[in-house]
Length: 447
Image (tube, rainbow, N blue to C red; front, side, top):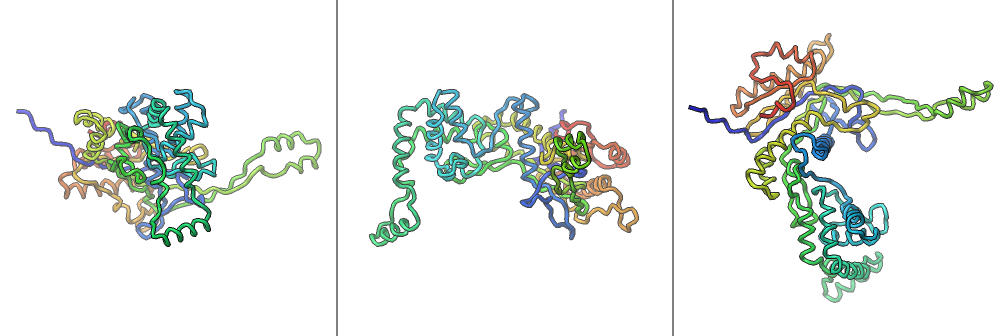
């Protein structure tokens, strides 16, 4: 008699500890490290936004390169440049002139409901006001429709632009006078949107179809919100990401640097006398940069049910959604472990870090273990509460916390551990009583 397999838990919870030295993965508006106060002390923080983008781009690049579980599958692109991308496709694929292509693409997208920058400012005139996350081939699809309906859309575009010019917002004084006149006439007035000729129905439908999430896997994972077009579907993301924070008190150093001027040094080296050399004394440039160190706790959750719902809503069958969801989960776990924000990557080599420990398990709800680090780790061996280096201390705390919670939450199961640190591997040897499987590869973290 075969045993009935236990159904997979709805939520996959991921927990990670990583030690970073002299890095600056994210900065605030002043160029300083981001921090939070937790447990009564300041901690360094890596925001969930920075983490999510790093993971999303990592997965997308692998898929586009034909690597990993999502190899060859469609992915999304988050940008303000959809009008420019559409125009480029009109130029390269459909032989339109550049200026006409840009004007037409912007008019079509604007008439669909997207808002653009100030036409008087060249740098933003053809950029949408908000970043729009859509399938990467959206511009090509819209361009193909515009080229197919070129004659009717050119005629509509000319009327749209001419009308737009006549209803352009007047200067402040003239606008107030017009509003007063409308109020005196008892006329509520008409808005620019109602005066402009509407985009033909078939064209609007084609643009909305192109902008829809469709089968872009990363949109199904991370979701999107588009308020400007009410009938373009929003997606409730299946991934929840927490801000990462140091498990010990924040430590920061303001590093003074002096950059050499190669040409100046060459002249100084070849100077014929002391006075000539003195003219080329001093560094080419000096300044300060903030650097941080510490062991960070990271946490993220995948809602497997929501992911399948998103993929089916995008048009997949139940079987297709189930297959795609498994591949998406594998790639998400890989990106959670491998990806890292790229700020200062060349000057700090921060992207080369590997986790001290990764803990993965499934359950019927998300589980955060941030509470294990409410009391900061005291690394001072001479202190009364000293626990030694934060990496091993954090591992011991995290696993004690997990064992304690697991005894009280029967839905937690299939827990797995992965480490890239030989010291931690030796530490785990002494914790065999812990009901957690130890694995050697990222792919084994998810059943």
